[in-house]
Image 1 (spheres, helix red, strand yellow):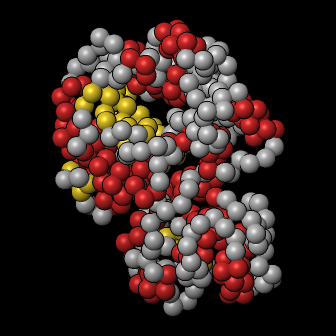
Image 2 (image 1 turned 30 degrees about the vertical axis):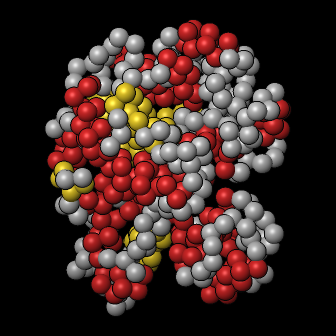
Image 3 (image 1 turned 90 degrees about the vertical axis):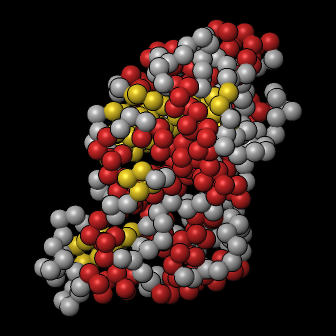
Length: 426
C-alpha cells in the first residue's frame, strides 16, 4: 500500500477515511483529501493501536487499518471468552461469528484457538469510489464472512491485475452476472458486490431476497459474478492510476480525442480498446460503424480493437463463458434505466418472458439495442453463441460516471432483476 500523508488526495485516501470512520476515529466527510481532520484521526488511531504516532500511514499503520476495509480480523481465544462476549465486544453477532467459523463449537472454545471475527458493518461500502484494490479487499472480506462462497481469478488485465469471480450456490443451473466492462461505469461493481453480500447473508440466516427463499436459489442455481471486468480502466477513472507509463499512454490516447473529457469520459481498457465492442458478434459491422465515427485507433471509447478478443479482459470473459454452461447472463452498464434483450434476429427461448418479469420488477423498459450500439458486445455474442437469454442492464440516469448519490435507487431497482435471473430456473 502507498504511504499516505497530509495533503495527499485520491481513492486510497477515501479508503483510509472509510476505515477510520468504521473504527470510530473519523467523523468528517469521506472526500479523498488527507487534511488536518484526517491527520488527527490517524494520530488517534495510531496511538490506540500502539503504532508510532506520526500521522503518516505507512506499512505498520496499514496493517491495523486493513481489517476495517476487509471487514474482519483474526482473534485468538482467551480464557473466559464466550461468543456472546466477543460479539458484544466487537459490535457483531453470535450468528455472524458462527457463519464465519462453521466448524467452531460454541460450547467448547479453546484458549489459543484462532477464529474470524466479522465486524458489525457491511463488507461492501457504497459511499466511496471503487478501485481494483478495494474490490480485491472486499472479495477477501466476503469470503471470510461467508466461507461457502467460492472465489477465484479467470484472467488478467493489460496491467496484470487479477480478474476476480465469486460463485455462490450448488444448483445445476448456472447463471453469470458481470459489471464494469466500461471504466466510467464502475458504480455497477458495488451493485453486484452488495447483491452477493445480501444474498449470502439471507442464505446464512435462512431468509429471503426479493421474496424468494435464499435456500431455494442456493440449491437451484449456481451464480457466478465478475464484479470488475475492466480493473485498469476503472483505476484510471477513479484516480488510482495517476502516473507511470500506462497513465502517460492513456493521456496520449486521450489527446487525440479532445472532445472526450479525461479521465471521466474513459470507457476503454487502459490500452484504449472498448471491451464491449471486442466480442465476435458482427464485430466487422461494429468496426465499420465506429471507424466511420472517427474511432480508428486506440481511444477512450468506441475503438473496437485490432481484432475480436484482442483485449485480454474480453478474451478472459469469453473463455470463462465457454468453460461454463450459463443458462442466462446479465451484463451491467450505465446509464438509461433500460434492459436490452435481443441481438439481431435471435429470439432465445424464454428471453422475452424473463425480460418482461425483470422489467416489471425494476420499472426499466425492455427494449432492443439501438443500431449504433447493437454489435460486438458481450450480450450480443452470448445470444449468438448459445441462443439463451442474455441482457444488458443500463442502470441510473445522467452522465457517467454516475454519482454515488444514485446508488441506493439503482440497487433497489435492480434487486428484482438480479433475483429473477436465478429464480427463473428453479
